[in-house]
Length: 623
Image (cartoon, rainbow, N blue to C red; front, top):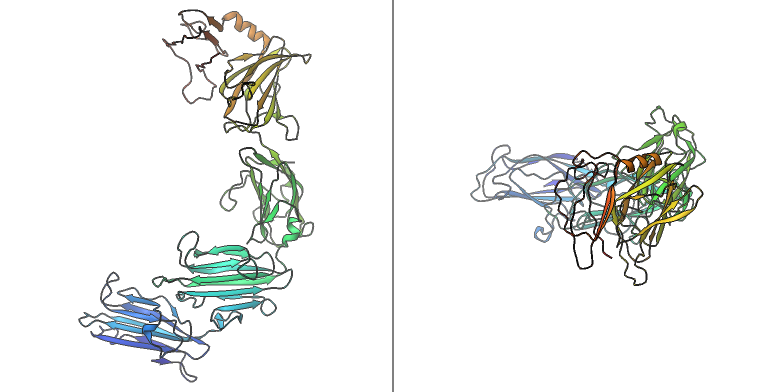
Protein backbone atom coordinates (compact mmCIF):
# COMPACT_ATOMS: atom_id res chain seq x y z
CA UNK A 1 0.00 0.00 0.00
CA UNK A 2 1.32 3.42 -0.99
CA UNK A 3 -0.15 6.25 1.08
CA UNK A 4 0.34 9.96 0.58
CA UNK A 5 0.95 11.70 3.89
CA UNK A 6 1.90 15.24 4.85
CA UNK A 7 5.47 14.25 5.60
CA UNK A 8 5.71 11.48 3.04
CA UNK A 9 7.25 11.48 -0.42
CA UNK A 10 5.25 12.61 -3.44
CA UNK A 11 6.65 9.84 -5.64
CA UNK A 12 8.27 6.42 -5.60
CA UNK A 13 8.52 3.12 -7.43
CA UNK A 14 6.55 -0.12 -7.50
CA UNK A 15 7.24 -3.51 -9.09
CA UNK A 16 6.19 -7.13 -9.29
CA UNK A 17 7.74 -9.63 -6.82
CA UNK A 18 11.44 -10.44 -7.52
CA UNK A 19 11.60 -7.92 -10.39
CA UNK A 20 13.60 -7.98 -12.64
CA UNK A 21 13.84 -11.71 -11.91
CA UNK A 22 10.84 -13.92 -12.75
CA UNK A 23 7.94 -13.66 -10.36
CA UNK A 24 6.70 -16.84 -8.63
CA UNK A 25 3.53 -18.70 -9.63
CA UNK A 26 0.14 -18.79 -7.91
CA UNK A 27 0.02 -15.16 -6.77
CA UNK A 28 -2.51 -12.43 -6.24
CA UNK A 29 -0.85 -9.18 -5.30
CA UNK A 30 -2.80 -5.98 -4.57
CA UNK A 31 -1.17 -2.57 -4.94
CA UNK A 32 -3.16 0.27 -3.39
CA UNK A 33 -2.21 3.91 -4.00
CA UNK A 34 -3.96 6.53 -1.86
CA UNK A 35 -3.40 10.27 -2.34
CA UNK A 36 -4.47 13.03 0.02
CA UNK A 37 -7.63 14.99 -0.59
CA UNK A 38 -7.30 17.32 -3.60
CA UNK A 39 -4.54 15.13 -5.00
CA UNK A 40 -4.53 12.34 -7.53
CA UNK A 41 -2.45 9.27 -8.23
CA UNK A 42 -0.35 9.01 -11.38
CA UNK A 43 1.26 5.73 -12.54
CA UNK A 44 3.80 5.32 -15.31
CA UNK A 45 4.98 1.81 -16.20
CA UNK A 46 8.66 1.58 -17.11
CA UNK A 47 8.83 -2.15 -17.94
CA UNK A 48 6.14 -4.76 -18.52
CA UNK A 49 6.45 -8.47 -19.42
CA UNK A 50 3.97 -11.08 -18.20
CA UNK A 51 3.64 -14.75 -19.11
CA UNK A 52 1.25 -15.48 -21.96
CA UNK A 53 0.24 -13.59 -25.10
CA UNK A 54 -1.99 -10.64 -25.82
CA UNK A 55 -4.40 -13.02 -27.56
CA UNK A 56 -4.61 -15.28 -24.50
CA UNK A 57 -3.90 -13.65 -21.16
CA UNK A 58 -2.39 -16.13 -18.65
CA UNK A 59 -0.96 -13.75 -16.06
CA UNK A 60 -2.39 -10.22 -16.00
CA UNK A 61 -3.00 -7.06 -14.00
CA UNK A 62 -6.37 -5.37 -13.42
CA UNK A 63 -6.38 -1.61 -12.97
CA UNK A 64 -9.09 0.24 -11.03
CA UNK A 65 -8.65 4.00 -11.42
CA UNK A 66 -12.20 5.28 -10.85
CA UNK A 67 -12.51 4.30 -7.16
CA UNK A 68 -13.86 6.87 -4.71
CA UNK A 69 -12.66 4.95 -1.61
CA UNK A 70 -9.75 2.56 -1.05
CA UNK A 71 -11.73 -0.01 0.96
CA UNK A 72 -14.58 -0.48 -1.50
CA UNK A 73 -15.43 -3.94 -2.88
CA UNK A 74 -13.55 -4.21 -6.16
CA UNK A 75 -16.02 -6.70 -7.61
CA UNK A 76 -18.70 -4.00 -7.50
CA UNK A 77 -16.53 -1.40 -9.25
CA UNK A 78 -15.87 -0.79 -12.93
CA UNK A 79 -12.61 -2.16 -14.23
CA UNK A 80 -10.50 0.46 -15.98
CA UNK A 81 -8.42 -2.05 -17.91
CA UNK A 82 -6.83 -5.50 -18.02
CA UNK A 83 -3.27 -5.90 -19.35
CA UNK A 84 -1.05 -8.89 -20.07
CA UNK A 85 1.93 -10.14 -22.09
CA UNK A 86 3.83 -7.08 -23.35
CA UNK A 87 0.82 -4.73 -23.52
CA UNK A 88 1.19 -2.33 -20.64
CA UNK A 89 -1.13 0.50 -19.65
CA UNK A 90 -0.44 3.97 -20.89
CA UNK A 91 -0.12 6.62 -18.23
CA UNK A 92 -2.77 6.02 -15.56
CA UNK A 93 -4.26 8.90 -13.54
CA UNK A 94 -6.95 8.38 -10.93
CA UNK A 95 -10.35 9.99 -11.35
CA UNK A 96 -10.47 10.61 -7.59
CA UNK A 97 -7.57 9.94 -5.22
CA UNK A 98 -7.28 6.12 -5.32
CA UNK A 99 -5.83 3.54 -7.72
CA UNK A 100 -5.75 -0.20 -7.07
CA UNK A 101 -3.79 -2.71 -9.16
CA UNK A 102 -4.43 -6.45 -8.77
CA UNK A 103 -1.69 -8.75 -10.11
CA UNK A 104 -3.03 -12.23 -11.00
CA UNK A 105 -0.56 -15.11 -11.53
CA UNK A 106 -1.94 -18.56 -12.34
CA UNK A 107 -0.93 -21.65 -10.43
CA UNK A 108 1.27 -23.19 -13.14
CA UNK A 109 2.68 -19.94 -14.49
CA UNK A 110 6.03 -20.11 -16.20
CA UNK A 111 6.83 -16.68 -14.80
CA UNK A 112 8.40 -13.64 -16.46
CA UNK A 113 10.21 -10.48 -15.50
CA UNK A 114 6.99 -8.81 -14.44
CA UNK A 115 6.67 -5.06 -14.28
CA UNK A 116 8.02 -1.93 -12.70
CA UNK A 117 6.84 1.64 -12.62
CA UNK A 118 6.84 5.04 -10.99
CA UNK A 119 4.00 6.49 -8.95
CA UNK A 120 3.46 10.11 -7.99
CA UNK A 121 0.85 12.13 -6.13
CA UNK A 122 -0.16 15.20 -8.14
CA UNK A 123 -2.47 18.12 -7.27
CA UNK A 124 -5.82 17.92 -9.04
CA UNK A 125 -5.96 21.72 -9.35
CA UNK A 126 -5.34 21.48 -13.12
CA UNK A 127 -8.59 19.49 -13.53
CA UNK A 128 -10.65 22.03 -11.56
CA UNK A 129 -10.92 24.36 -14.54
CA UNK A 130 -13.62 26.58 -13.07
CA UNK A 131 -16.44 26.67 -10.54
CA UNK A 132 -17.91 23.21 -9.95
CA UNK A 133 -21.52 23.16 -11.18
CA UNK A 134 -22.75 20.15 -9.18
CA UNK A 135 -21.51 17.45 -6.82
CA UNK A 136 -20.45 15.50 -9.88
CA UNK A 137 -16.70 15.57 -10.38
CA UNK A 138 -16.67 16.86 -13.93
CA UNK A 139 -19.16 19.76 -14.24
CA UNK A 140 -17.66 23.26 -14.33
CA UNK A 141 -18.53 26.87 -15.13
CA UNK A 142 -15.73 29.11 -16.43
CA UNK A 143 -16.34 32.87 -16.10
CA UNK A 144 -14.28 35.30 -18.16
CA UNK A 145 -14.45 37.76 -15.28
CA UNK A 146 -12.51 35.26 -13.17
CA UNK A 147 -10.14 33.81 -15.79
CA UNK A 148 -9.92 35.14 -19.35
CA UNK A 149 -7.46 32.46 -20.50
CA UNK A 150 -6.85 28.91 -19.44
CA UNK A 151 -6.66 25.21 -20.25
CA UNK A 152 -9.45 22.62 -20.16
CA UNK A 153 -8.26 19.06 -19.52
CA UNK A 154 -10.24 15.86 -19.88
CA UNK A 155 -10.83 14.19 -16.48
CA UNK A 156 -7.58 12.18 -16.28
CA UNK A 157 -5.42 13.72 -19.02
CA UNK A 158 -2.84 12.66 -20.16
CA UNK A 159 -3.83 9.28 -18.77
CA UNK A 160 -6.50 7.07 -20.27
CA UNK A 161 -9.84 8.79 -19.78
CA UNK A 162 -12.63 7.00 -17.86
CA UNK A 163 -15.53 5.33 -19.64
CA UNK A 164 -19.23 5.94 -18.96
CA UNK A 165 -18.60 9.52 -17.97
CA UNK A 166 -20.17 12.86 -18.89
CA UNK A 167 -18.30 16.13 -18.41
CA UNK A 168 -19.72 19.61 -18.96
CA UNK A 169 -17.80 22.87 -19.29
CA UNK A 170 -19.82 26.10 -19.55
CA UNK A 171 -17.85 29.14 -20.66
CA UNK A 172 -19.61 32.41 -19.78
CA UNK A 173 -18.20 35.67 -21.15
CA UNK A 174 -19.06 39.35 -21.12
CA UNK A 175 -21.08 41.18 -23.84
CA UNK A 176 -19.14 41.78 -27.10
CA UNK A 177 -16.66 39.06 -26.18
CA UNK A 178 -16.08 35.95 -28.26
CA UNK A 179 -14.35 32.73 -27.23
CA UNK A 180 -11.57 30.90 -29.04
CA UNK A 181 -10.83 27.22 -28.45
CA UNK A 182 -7.48 25.84 -29.56
CA UNK A 183 -7.17 22.05 -29.51
CA UNK A 184 -3.56 21.60 -28.41
CA UNK A 185 -3.96 17.83 -27.97
CA UNK A 186 -7.02 15.71 -28.76
CA UNK A 187 -7.13 11.90 -28.67
CA UNK A 188 -10.64 10.46 -28.29
CA UNK A 189 -11.91 7.09 -29.48
CA UNK A 190 -13.05 7.30 -33.12
CA UNK A 191 -16.24 5.34 -33.68
CA UNK A 192 -17.19 6.77 -37.09
CA UNK A 193 -17.67 10.01 -38.99
CA UNK A 194 -20.61 11.07 -36.81
CA UNK A 195 -18.83 10.21 -33.52
CA UNK A 196 -21.60 7.94 -32.20
CA UNK A 197 -19.60 6.78 -29.17
CA UNK A 198 -17.01 8.93 -27.39
CA UNK A 199 -17.11 12.58 -28.40
CA UNK A 200 -16.73 16.21 -27.43
CA UNK A 201 -19.63 18.37 -28.62
CA UNK A 202 -19.18 22.13 -28.77
CA UNK A 203 -22.42 24.16 -28.58
CA UNK A 204 -22.55 27.80 -29.65
CA UNK A 205 -24.32 29.10 -26.54
CA UNK A 206 -24.71 28.48 -22.83
CA UNK A 207 -26.57 25.13 -22.99
CA UNK A 208 -27.03 21.98 -25.05
CA UNK A 209 -30.07 23.64 -26.66
CA UNK A 210 -27.75 25.98 -28.58
CA UNK A 211 -26.65 25.21 -32.17
CA UNK A 212 -23.81 22.72 -32.48
CA UNK A 213 -20.54 24.08 -33.78
CA UNK A 214 -18.87 20.70 -34.10
CA UNK A 215 -18.91 17.18 -32.69
CA UNK A 216 -15.33 15.98 -32.40
CA UNK A 217 -13.67 12.59 -31.98
CA UNK A 218 -10.56 10.77 -33.16
CA UNK A 219 -7.21 12.55 -33.43
CA UNK A 220 -7.29 16.30 -34.06
CA UNK A 221 -4.39 18.62 -34.75
CA UNK A 222 -4.45 22.41 -34.98
CA UNK A 223 -8.24 22.59 -34.69
CA UNK A 224 -9.47 26.08 -33.80
CA UNK A 225 -13.08 26.99 -33.04
CA UNK A 226 -14.74 30.32 -32.24
CA UNK A 227 -18.01 31.17 -30.57
CA UNK A 228 -20.42 33.52 -32.31
CA UNK A 229 -21.13 35.43 -29.09
CA UNK A 230 -19.86 35.35 -25.50
CA UNK A 231 -20.87 31.81 -24.40
CA UNK A 232 -19.93 28.20 -25.17
CA UNK A 233 -21.10 24.85 -23.83
CA UNK A 234 -18.79 21.81 -24.08
CA UNK A 235 -20.03 18.29 -23.40
CA UNK A 236 -17.65 15.32 -23.26
CA UNK A 237 -19.23 11.85 -23.27
CA UNK A 238 -17.47 8.47 -23.12
CA UNK A 239 -19.14 5.10 -23.46
CA UNK A 240 -18.23 1.62 -22.29
CA UNK A 241 -15.01 1.17 -24.25
CA UNK A 242 -12.78 -0.52 -21.69
CA UNK A 243 -10.28 -1.67 -24.31
CA UNK A 244 -9.81 1.86 -25.60
CA UNK A 245 -6.51 3.53 -24.69
CA UNK A 246 -6.93 7.23 -25.42
CA UNK A 247 -5.66 10.15 -23.38
CA UNK A 248 -8.50 12.64 -23.95
CA UNK A 249 -7.84 16.31 -24.61
CA UNK A 250 -6.06 19.50 -23.72
CA UNK A 251 -7.88 22.59 -25.00
CA UNK A 252 -6.81 26.20 -24.55
CA UNK A 253 -9.58 28.80 -24.26
CA UNK A 254 -9.55 32.59 -24.45
CA UNK A 255 -12.25 35.23 -23.97
CA UNK A 256 -11.61 38.48 -25.86
CA UNK A 257 -13.21 41.46 -27.57
CA UNK A 258 -10.36 41.62 -30.09
CA UNK A 259 -11.78 38.80 -32.21
CA UNK A 260 -13.61 39.89 -35.35
CA UNK A 261 -17.10 41.29 -34.84
CA UNK A 262 -19.53 39.21 -36.91
CA UNK A 263 -22.20 41.93 -36.96
CA UNK A 264 -19.75 44.44 -38.39
CA UNK A 265 -18.39 41.96 -40.92
CA UNK A 266 -21.65 40.91 -42.58
CA UNK A 267 -23.29 44.31 -42.21
CA UNK A 268 -26.67 42.73 -41.54
CA UNK A 269 -27.10 41.90 -45.24
CA UNK A 270 -29.65 39.29 -46.21
CA UNK A 271 -27.97 36.27 -47.78
CA UNK A 272 -24.67 36.65 -45.91
CA UNK A 273 -24.15 34.20 -43.05
CA UNK A 274 -21.25 33.56 -40.73
CA UNK A 275 -19.84 30.03 -40.92
CA UNK A 276 -20.34 28.82 -37.38
CA UNK A 277 -17.16 27.96 -35.51
CA UNK A 278 -14.86 30.23 -37.53
CA UNK A 279 -13.57 33.63 -36.58
CA UNK A 280 -14.58 35.47 -39.75
CA UNK A 281 -15.54 33.06 -42.56
CA UNK A 282 -18.69 34.08 -44.46
CA UNK A 283 -20.96 32.43 -46.99
CA UNK A 284 -22.66 34.73 -49.48
CA UNK A 285 -25.67 33.08 -51.17
CA UNK A 286 -27.50 34.37 -54.21
CA UNK A 287 -31.23 34.92 -54.07
CA UNK A 288 -31.19 35.09 -57.90
CA UNK A 289 -29.27 37.73 -59.82
CA UNK A 290 -28.58 40.01 -56.88
CA UNK A 291 -25.64 41.93 -55.40
CA UNK A 292 -23.81 41.98 -52.07
CA UNK A 293 -20.95 43.90 -50.53
CA UNK A 294 -18.13 42.11 -48.70
CA UNK A 295 -15.28 43.71 -46.82
CA UNK A 296 -12.33 42.95 -44.60
CA UNK A 297 -12.80 43.01 -40.80
CA UNK A 298 -13.04 46.53 -39.29
CA UNK A 299 -13.16 48.15 -42.75
CA UNK A 300 -12.43 51.04 -43.33
CA UNK A 301 -10.27 50.87 -40.21
CA UNK A 302 -7.13 48.73 -40.07
CA UNK A 303 -7.72 45.00 -39.98
CA UNK A 304 -6.53 42.53 -37.30
CA UNK A 305 -4.10 39.69 -37.91
CA UNK A 306 -6.30 36.85 -39.13
CA UNK A 307 -7.42 34.74 -42.09
CA UNK A 308 -10.97 35.13 -43.39
CA UNK A 309 -12.65 33.06 -46.11
CA UNK A 310 -15.58 34.32 -48.20
CA UNK A 311 -17.51 31.59 -50.03
CA UNK A 312 -19.62 33.12 -52.81
CA UNK A 313 -22.34 30.76 -54.03
CA UNK A 314 -24.50 31.37 -57.06
CA UNK A 315 -27.64 29.36 -57.75
CA UNK A 316 -27.20 25.88 -59.19
CA UNK A 317 -30.13 23.68 -60.13
CA UNK A 318 -32.29 22.37 -62.92
CA UNK A 319 -33.61 25.85 -63.67
CA UNK A 320 -30.90 28.14 -62.37
CA UNK A 321 -27.20 28.31 -63.01
CA UNK A 322 -25.26 31.40 -62.03
CA UNK A 323 -21.71 32.69 -62.16
CA UNK A 324 -20.06 35.02 -59.67
CA UNK A 325 -18.55 38.39 -60.56
CA UNK A 326 -16.51 40.44 -58.11
CA UNK A 327 -15.32 44.03 -58.40
CA UNK A 328 -12.91 45.43 -55.79
CA UNK A 329 -13.64 49.05 -54.97
CA UNK A 330 -10.68 49.16 -52.57
CA UNK A 331 -7.78 46.77 -51.97
CA UNK A 332 -5.03 47.83 -49.57
CA UNK A 333 -3.17 44.86 -48.09
CA UNK A 334 0.56 45.31 -47.52
CA UNK A 335 2.82 42.29 -47.82
CA UNK A 336 6.47 42.09 -46.85
CA UNK A 337 7.22 40.40 -50.16
CA UNK A 338 6.47 41.38 -53.74
CA UNK A 339 4.93 37.94 -54.27
CA UNK A 340 2.26 38.62 -51.62
CA UNK A 341 3.34 35.66 -49.49
CA UNK A 342 2.46 36.78 -45.96
CA UNK A 343 -0.55 39.06 -46.61
CA UNK A 344 -2.89 38.93 -49.59
CA UNK A 345 -6.35 38.54 -51.09
CA UNK A 346 -6.48 35.21 -52.97
CA UNK A 347 -9.14 34.35 -55.56
CA UNK A 348 -10.27 30.80 -56.35
CA UNK A 349 -12.38 31.01 -59.51
CA UNK A 350 -13.50 27.37 -59.30
CA UNK A 351 -14.38 27.61 -55.61
CA UNK A 352 -11.68 25.02 -54.90
CA UNK A 353 -10.40 24.18 -51.41
CA UNK A 354 -8.21 27.11 -50.47
CA UNK A 355 -6.31 25.09 -47.86
CA UNK A 356 -4.88 22.64 -50.39
CA UNK A 357 -5.23 24.24 -53.84
CA UNK A 358 -3.28 27.00 -55.57
CA UNK A 359 -5.31 30.21 -56.09
CA UNK A 360 -6.09 31.46 -59.58
CA UNK A 361 -4.98 34.95 -58.58
CA UNK A 362 -3.36 36.62 -55.58
CA UNK A 363 -3.24 40.36 -54.95
CA UNK A 364 -1.71 42.74 -52.43
CA UNK A 365 -0.60 46.36 -52.50
CA UNK A 366 2.54 45.36 -54.42
CA UNK A 367 0.61 44.18 -57.49
CA UNK A 368 -2.76 45.88 -57.09
CA UNK A 369 -2.20 47.64 -60.42
CA UNK A 370 -2.68 44.27 -62.15
CA UNK A 371 -6.07 43.69 -60.51
CA UNK A 372 -8.73 43.39 -63.25
CA UNK A 373 -11.82 45.54 -63.00
CA UNK A 374 -13.98 42.43 -62.66
CA UNK A 375 -13.14 38.80 -61.92
CA UNK A 376 -15.55 36.10 -63.09
CA UNK A 377 -15.96 32.59 -61.66
CA UNK A 378 -15.71 29.46 -63.81
CA UNK A 379 -18.64 27.78 -62.07
CA UNK A 380 -21.34 28.78 -59.53
CA UNK A 381 -18.81 29.15 -56.68
CA UNK A 382 -15.96 31.58 -56.10
CA UNK A 383 -13.84 31.65 -52.95
CA UNK A 384 -12.00 34.72 -51.67
CA UNK A 385 -9.39 34.39 -48.92
CA UNK A 386 -8.01 37.34 -46.96
CA UNK A 387 -4.80 36.70 -45.06
CA UNK A 388 -3.37 39.52 -42.98
CA UNK A 389 -0.48 40.17 -40.65
CA UNK A 390 -0.35 42.40 -37.60
CA UNK A 391 2.37 44.63 -39.02
CA UNK A 392 0.18 46.93 -41.10
CA UNK A 393 -2.35 49.72 -40.68
CA UNK A 394 -3.98 49.06 -44.06
CA UNK A 395 -7.74 49.35 -44.55
CA UNK A 396 -8.09 45.96 -46.26
CA UNK A 397 -10.67 45.67 -49.02
CA UNK A 398 -14.24 46.38 -50.04
CA UNK A 399 -15.79 44.53 -52.97
CA UNK A 400 -19.12 44.24 -54.77
CA UNK A 401 -20.27 40.67 -55.49
CA UNK A 402 -22.73 40.17 -58.30
CA UNK A 403 -24.53 36.96 -59.31
CA UNK A 404 -25.47 36.61 -62.96
CA UNK A 405 -27.16 33.83 -64.88
CA UNK A 406 -24.58 31.62 -66.58
CA UNK A 407 -26.05 30.39 -69.85
CA UNK A 408 -22.91 28.50 -70.77
CA UNK A 409 -22.96 30.06 -74.24
CA UNK A 410 -19.78 31.28 -75.94
CA UNK A 411 -19.97 34.66 -77.57
CA UNK A 412 -20.33 38.25 -76.46
CA UNK A 413 -23.34 39.03 -74.23
CA UNK A 414 -25.58 41.73 -75.64
CA UNK A 415 -25.39 43.63 -72.34
CA UNK A 416 -24.35 43.23 -68.71
CA UNK A 417 -27.88 42.15 -67.84
CA UNK A 418 -29.08 38.58 -67.45
CA UNK A 419 -30.70 38.58 -70.90
CA UNK A 420 -29.91 35.48 -72.98
CA UNK A 421 -28.70 37.32 -76.08
CA UNK A 422 -25.26 36.78 -77.58
CA UNK A 423 -23.31 38.14 -80.55
CA UNK A 424 -20.78 36.24 -82.68
CA UNK A 425 -18.86 38.68 -84.85
CA UNK A 426 -16.82 38.05 -87.96
CA UNK A 427 -14.39 40.76 -86.91
CA UNK A 428 -13.45 38.65 -83.87
CA UNK A 429 -13.65 35.04 -85.11
CA UNK A 430 -14.29 33.65 -88.58
CA UNK A 431 -15.70 30.44 -87.15
CA UNK A 432 -16.81 28.95 -83.86
CA UNK A 433 -19.70 27.27 -82.07
CA UNK A 434 -22.89 28.26 -80.34
CA UNK A 435 -25.25 26.11 -78.30
CA UNK A 436 -28.41 25.90 -76.26
CA UNK A 437 -28.22 27.19 -72.68
CA UNK A 438 -26.17 24.97 -70.31
CA UNK A 439 -25.31 22.49 -73.10
CA UNK A 440 -24.48 19.56 -72.77
CA UNK A 441 -26.71 19.63 -69.68
CA UNK A 442 -30.46 19.92 -70.25
CA UNK A 443 -31.58 23.41 -71.14
CA UNK A 444 -33.90 25.18 -68.64
CA UNK A 445 -37.60 25.36 -69.39
CA UNK A 446 -39.45 28.59 -70.21
CA UNK A 447 -36.39 30.08 -71.89
CA UNK A 448 -35.75 32.30 -74.92
CA UNK A 449 -32.21 32.83 -76.22
CA UNK A 450 -31.17 34.92 -79.23
CA UNK A 451 -27.95 34.41 -81.19
CA UNK A 452 -26.70 37.06 -83.64
CA UNK A 453 -24.19 35.70 -86.18
CA UNK A 454 -22.80 38.92 -87.65
CA UNK A 455 -20.77 38.70 -90.83
CA UNK A 456 -19.27 41.58 -92.75
CA UNK A 457 -20.84 42.98 -95.89
CA UNK A 458 -20.03 40.55 -98.69
CA UNK A 459 -19.96 37.52 -96.34
CA UNK A 460 -22.52 34.81 -95.81
CA UNK A 461 -23.08 32.61 -92.77
CA UNK A 462 -22.88 28.82 -92.88
CA UNK A 463 -24.16 26.64 -90.02
CA UNK A 464 -24.09 22.92 -89.41
CA UNK A 465 -25.09 20.94 -86.33
CA UNK A 466 -23.34 18.08 -84.56
CA UNK A 467 -26.04 17.73 -81.89
CA UNK A 468 -29.73 18.57 -82.00
CA UNK A 469 -32.00 16.99 -79.38
CA UNK A 470 -35.06 19.00 -78.38
CA UNK A 471 -37.91 17.87 -76.17
CA UNK A 472 -40.90 16.58 -78.18
CA UNK A 473 -44.17 18.40 -77.95
CA UNK A 474 -47.26 16.50 -76.78
CA UNK A 475 -49.62 19.26 -77.82
CA UNK A 476 -51.82 18.61 -80.86
CA UNK A 477 -51.96 22.31 -81.65
CA UNK A 478 -48.25 23.13 -81.38
CA UNK A 479 -45.92 20.38 -82.62
CA UNK A 480 -42.85 22.64 -82.23
CA UNK A 481 -43.13 23.99 -78.69
CA UNK A 482 -39.35 23.74 -78.21
CA UNK A 483 -37.73 25.00 -81.39
CA UNK A 484 -34.89 26.82 -83.09
CA UNK A 485 -35.83 29.49 -85.59
CA UNK A 486 -33.27 30.84 -88.09
CA UNK A 487 -33.66 34.10 -90.02
CA UNK A 488 -31.70 35.70 -92.86
CA UNK A 489 -30.79 39.27 -91.95
CA UNK A 490 -29.86 41.53 -94.87
CA UNK A 491 -27.78 44.68 -94.76
CA UNK A 492 -30.94 46.82 -94.64
CA UNK A 493 -32.12 44.78 -91.56
CA UNK A 494 -34.82 43.02 -93.58
CA UNK A 495 -35.41 39.47 -92.31
CA UNK A 496 -36.67 36.31 -93.99
CA UNK A 497 -37.25 32.91 -92.41
CA UNK A 498 -34.53 30.33 -93.09
CA UNK A 499 -36.15 27.51 -91.19
CA UNK A 500 -37.88 26.37 -88.01
CA UNK A 501 -36.58 23.18 -86.40
CA UNK A 502 -37.78 21.09 -83.49
CA UNK A 503 -37.72 17.49 -82.25
CA UNK A 504 -39.31 16.22 -85.46
CA UNK A 505 -36.99 17.79 -88.02
CA UNK A 506 -33.21 17.86 -87.74
CA UNK A 507 -31.54 20.85 -89.43
CA UNK A 508 -29.05 20.03 -92.15
CA UNK A 509 -26.25 22.36 -93.27
CA UNK A 510 -27.57 25.90 -93.62
CA UNK A 511 -26.29 28.82 -95.67
CA UNK A 512 -27.66 32.31 -95.38
CA UNK A 513 -29.24 33.79 -98.50
CA UNK A 514 -27.17 35.78 -100.95
CA UNK A 515 -26.59 39.31 -99.63
CA UNK A 516 -27.66 38.18 -96.13
CA UNK A 517 -24.48 38.72 -94.13
CA UNK A 518 -26.17 37.91 -90.81
CA UNK A 519 -28.30 35.19 -89.27
CA UNK A 520 -30.52 35.66 -86.23
CA UNK A 521 -31.21 32.41 -84.37
CA UNK A 522 -33.94 32.21 -81.73
CA UNK A 523 -34.10 29.25 -79.35
CA UNK A 524 -37.45 28.86 -77.58
CA UNK A 525 -38.22 26.35 -74.80
CA UNK A 526 -41.67 26.01 -73.28
CA UNK A 527 -42.46 25.55 -69.61
CA UNK A 528 -43.06 21.79 -69.71
CA UNK A 529 -40.22 19.57 -70.92
CA UNK A 530 -36.47 19.75 -71.47
CA UNK A 531 -33.70 17.88 -73.30
CA UNK A 532 -30.00 18.08 -74.14
CA UNK A 533 -30.41 20.83 -76.72
CA UNK A 534 -28.04 21.58 -79.58
CA UNK A 535 -24.55 22.58 -80.57
CA UNK A 536 -23.85 24.20 -83.91
CA UNK A 537 -20.76 25.30 -85.84
CA UNK A 538 -20.78 28.57 -87.73
CA UNK A 539 -18.50 30.04 -90.39
CA UNK A 540 -18.37 33.44 -92.06
CA UNK A 541 -17.55 32.85 -95.73
CA UNK A 542 -16.96 35.52 -98.40
CA UNK A 543 -19.51 35.37 -101.22
CA UNK A 544 -16.75 34.97 -103.80
CA UNK A 545 -15.55 31.77 -102.11
CA UNK A 546 -19.07 30.37 -102.23
CA UNK A 547 -19.33 31.23 -105.90
CA UNK A 548 -16.05 29.45 -106.60
CA UNK A 549 -17.17 26.41 -104.62
CA UNK A 550 -20.45 26.30 -106.60
CA UNK A 551 -18.53 26.39 -109.84
CA UNK A 552 -16.26 23.50 -108.76
CA UNK A 553 -18.96 21.12 -107.66
CA UNK A 554 -22.60 20.67 -106.94
CA UNK A 555 -22.54 19.64 -103.26
CA UNK A 556 -26.21 19.35 -102.45
CA UNK A 557 -29.00 17.26 -103.93
CA UNK A 558 -32.62 16.38 -103.27
CA UNK A 559 -33.55 12.90 -104.47
CA UNK A 560 -37.29 12.24 -104.75
CA UNK A 561 -39.11 9.30 -106.36
CA UNK A 562 -36.01 7.37 -107.44
CA UNK A 563 -36.01 3.58 -106.94
CA UNK A 564 -32.23 3.32 -106.54
CA UNK A 565 -29.05 5.23 -107.24
CA UNK A 566 -25.76 6.43 -105.88
CA UNK A 567 -24.49 9.51 -104.10
CA UNK A 568 -20.85 10.54 -104.30
CA UNK A 569 -18.71 13.34 -102.94
CA UNK A 570 -17.48 15.97 -105.38
CA UNK A 571 -14.52 14.79 -107.54
CA UNK A 572 -14.95 11.14 -106.45
CA UNK A 573 -12.85 8.99 -106.74
CA UNK A 574 -10.37 11.89 -106.57
CA UNK A 575 -9.82 13.79 -103.31
CA UNK A 576 -12.61 16.10 -102.26
CA UNK A 577 -11.88 19.77 -101.77
CA UNK A 578 -11.57 21.37 -98.34
CA UNK A 579 -13.94 23.80 -96.65
CA UNK A 580 -17.15 22.12 -97.82
CA UNK A 581 -20.46 20.92 -96.40
CA UNK A 582 -22.54 18.56 -98.56
CA UNK A 583 -26.18 17.76 -98.02
CA UNK A 584 -28.27 15.02 -99.69
CA UNK A 585 -31.96 14.66 -98.97
CA UNK A 586 -33.66 11.40 -100.04
CA UNK A 587 -37.45 11.07 -99.92
CA UNK A 588 -39.63 8.05 -100.75
CA UNK A 589 -43.35 7.36 -100.80
CA UNK A 590 -45.27 6.56 -97.63
CA UNK A 591 -44.95 2.88 -96.79
CA UNK A 592 -41.44 2.61 -98.21
CA UNK A 593 -38.13 2.62 -96.35
CA UNK A 594 -34.62 3.57 -97.46
CA UNK A 595 -31.65 1.18 -97.52
CA UNK A 596 -28.35 3.07 -97.53
CA UNK A 597 -25.34 0.85 -98.14
CA UNK A 598 -21.88 2.52 -97.94
CA UNK A 599 -19.56 1.19 -100.66
CA UNK A 600 -16.59 3.49 -100.04
CA UNK A 601 -16.26 5.68 -96.96
CA UNK A 602 -12.88 7.34 -96.59
CA UNK A 603 -12.85 10.72 -94.83
CA UNK A 604 -10.26 12.40 -92.62
CA UNK A 605 -10.48 12.49 -88.85
CA UNK A 606 -11.44 9.80 -86.37
CA UNK A 607 -14.19 8.91 -83.96
CA UNK A 608 -14.16 11.30 -81.04
CA UNK A 609 -13.23 14.39 -83.04
CA UNK A 610 -15.33 17.43 -82.27
CA UNK A 611 -16.36 18.15 -85.85
CA UNK A 612 -13.27 20.07 -86.94
CA UNK A 613 -12.26 17.31 -89.40
CA UNK A 614 -14.47 15.51 -91.93
CA UNK A 615 -17.67 13.82 -90.85
CA UNK A 616 -20.42 11.71 -92.43
CA UNK A 617 -23.72 11.65 -90.52
CA UNK A 618 -27.27 10.43 -91.09
CA UNK A 619 -30.56 11.85 -89.87
CA UNK A 620 -33.91 10.11 -90.30
CA UNK A 621 -37.06 12.23 -90.51
CA UNK A 622 -40.71 11.47 -91.11
CA UNK A 623 -43.54 13.60 -92.43
